[in-house]
Length: 610
Image (tube, rainbow, N blue to C red; front, side, top):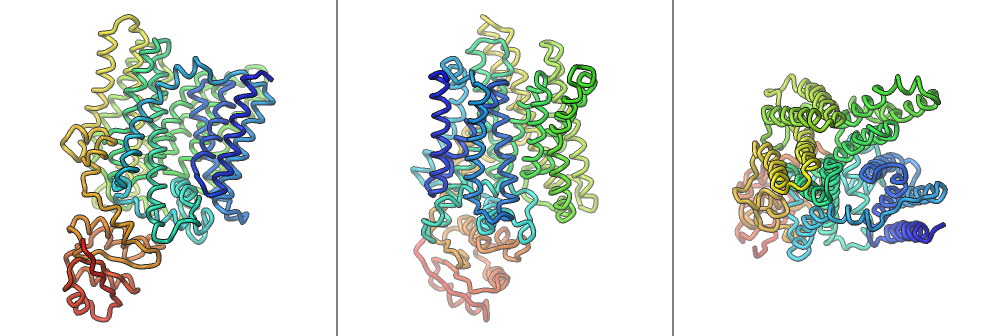
């Protein structure tokens, strides 16, 4: 074994072992999955391109976590124990493959000169938020709307040791499951009064990792589009593409509505696109990874799982005649069947029972950005048109085929989601709009990368190259501007900048630290005439749901609609709780008034200085 090979394999082995040990010891949940991911990337990259290896490693690891969540409770293993074992086996398996196969490709100086610049944009943007949160405690950006229910379902998964499909069924367990693994590590050492702070910090870190991962994959898509171009062109393309997942349209709307699963979904969709690009040279390997991406997405946000499955099906079916005629055709056909097998198996075993149980939920409404069908149509048409022009000009027909498949299958799934709303007042609602937003988020990155591909033929033409970079920034920006950001300042356009300057999605007054002080496990708490009405509304959006165990709990409605100055409505909410309630206020006279208004209700009034 060469010295370089021994150093790499030894370093990966130490990283996996140390990461799993720290996870089981309750120190940190982040090193083990990262070490396993790097080991898997190195193993896959021996026979494929590095962008595909990274995408495949992400998909495989997330798909395996989805399975661990399903089966850990059945075998009596704790969530942290099962996750640690999975990361250990995944890392060990990847390293064994490296040793047995005679690994010869490693990340050396040449690769680092390419990869390091790709990391600059996503790492810097995430670092801005991380430093802000660490120095100010400003976690409000990660605590809007659906965020609280993500925390409640996460705590349920922690208590159940994974997904208990009978007691607490969940059709999309991967996001809360990953959050549960992160929050469960070291949880026993956290004092009860600090539990909410601990959970929110782990949630925010998870979200930043997802967005950074999406930024990296977008950078890889951008750099890969400039095939044959100069190093400067590839770095420029990567930087432009990497910014896209951090815009108000993607990360900003996700944060505004508390869509943790949206950032994980986009991460998987971007990995899906890299896997599709690989099917041009490795159809079976690419299709197998796309099939696993479908499984991971079925466990994340099921409607979008149709995209990787359709891409996998086309990649294989279009080559069946070639496989059948060539030597070793029987073996290839068996591999073809194995490549797509995970999807129908998961659908039959998991998705269909979930759909029979929760199918009616596809017609419900909820908070969603004002994305309209015309906005979606414009982005889809532009994506197809630009890809078609590039296919003619640069002969990138494979990418054009992929865009057409994504748009076509999305149209079919979108029509199905719309059909589920046949009895509703409007045919356009939460599920069709969220599905469309996730798809066009992927298309926006593809549009930017497609425009950037022109850099490959512009060697020694700096003015033209700058024009292409500007166009690749302007066109996606204009398309996203159909649904403008919350704030009216430039900082609102890039979500990390909005967070640190309290603009757009982070425009509210910082009150997270006050919430951490008020929240006590097992104590039902309401804020009433405590801070300002806006701040009390934020506090109650969390306080009123934290003790819920079921989505149908009546108190959840009041967490969204309660007026923290309306005593009659407060009494209704207290009665809906049907348990002793602590009311926190800064009004010394509230106790007498509320006791009279809420006759017979078990109330304790806690007067505090605001």
